[in-house]
Length: 428
Image (tube, rainbow, N blue to C red; front, side, top):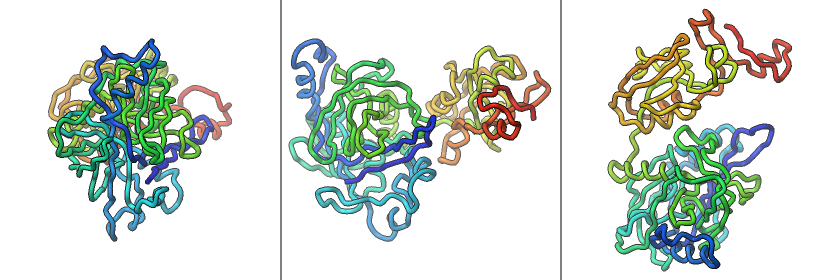
């Protein structure tokens, strides 16, 4: 059984360990559940809900490829291709994290996680990191049947995978609307922590749209429902018995739950799974721009009333944005949808159909203007990187100011002998 720890960049001086909740085993399952059976306000209601949703959650057993070409034998990170690869590269221990034997003597190279049946004819959702590079995938149903699974498709960028088993009449659950989820509402997580067997935990939604630096395409649902090793790929249910998230990662100094877990929102899951089922892969749009956050100081320098949008810092040569956007443009909306923060843009662009012509509102030289361009197709991780927000300060040329400006960094403040909280911009 395998845990995949990752070490995110410390925030506000607090070092944390980020761990994928892969480990799984005899996870619980689920029947279809309707909103009419909403588990609220009466004794035993939650128990009734669990009884209804437990037969569709399954265990996913993935036998990893062995031999000289395996990731571990080559010294490669087991997180390669997942949204957490950059964290592991920067903050993981030297030499990588081995794939250890499970507590019950499981073989090296075997990963276990959870999943859930989405349709009665055998379509199952789990995490990509559970089945990545697997030579063989088996699904264990709650009735102890084990069925060989075909990997229909995977999407490392969202850490989702779609499996198919040859079976019919399976108990299944439905995806809810994660956009309707509210902070404070009750949720339950179903999975198989530490290989103990089917386990249900209850909590609330702690936060929405949580950015854990796991890539530009997913903002997570945060919950205090206990999520541990083995919960990866398992469902997070609302009290109507709908899946509102796929449990994927935890923050933890020990590898166990401390009440900070993360789930991929069901609306992201729905979009990704539809493409995996049709194409076996996910196609995303691409602009080919490097962007950065519009800080309050930069907003003031550009004459903006509030700090919003995504600042174009640079363009990729030959990219779709060349000749349309310019360094220093602030993208305020994309295809009619507002860009409130720089991290909004990659998700909007990624959801756009390659080849589609979209309109963007940009702030250029102190005035708003509309530009149109054809969206390109994202082909590689190297292409994705420029579209992700950059925390490094880029100089912003502004005809309105007649100068180029950049946000102050701590290093710049030290060099200039300024106070740590000094504001302003650097004129370059």
